[in-house]
Image 1: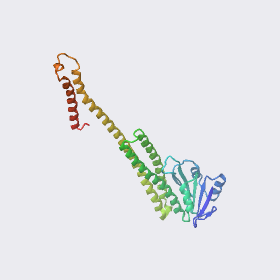
Image 2: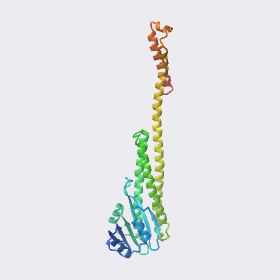
Image 3: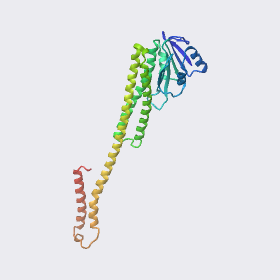
Image 4: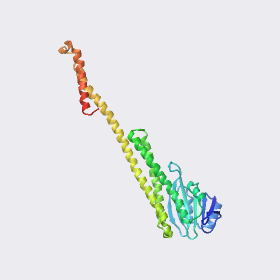
Length: 302
């Protein structure tokens, strides 16, 4: 599919030599030949644009600028596919060609709302929407990390929580690589002298990608802290269990000794002949156990 809009009024038109936005989605060989007939695409750039899964990159060719910008399709679900748009910008004739191998949601929205403008401002608007997907992911990630922190402190989902933390870390590393490549490409773009007074538009995009990158680094460190909190919480829980078992053992150890002594049935024990011998035995057990329990309570052991 090939379609075009004029920069002057945003009206749909055919392929024009100047001041036009051309959008190509999975063009057929015939459509691609028509595009190359009107606009001299560098073969290396075209090969990169047609390659599935190419990372973000920028290159300056003799006749045009070339940028591959790869972003997130659904920031709330980073396991979903990524959106990739290749931009061919011809500064001499003011032509912006967007090439994609699959539908891109934000590009379609801008296409429907485009009512005219300049090529550089349109390009900046498209890239801004791509950058926004990273910001949306960072915001959603912050909420997820806070939820994991609460679960780690509460000790909830103890068996599954480490798995969720490691899954989130893998997601962050994957998105961090995407953001790093996108930021590097925008850095090369913003430094071009031909942008002139419009350079600040692209410089703002680079600054925003820098904040995204810092946010992803902070989230990665925070996830490591969440894992440490979870392990510490589980360790404290285990310590409390061991402490309880130790208190029970200490309580019964002297009582077991007392019962063992009077369980030997030695005839020399005069206590066997006492009228209150049973009371003496059971009272001794109660006194030993109660005294130890009171002492350990005073010490804060339970």
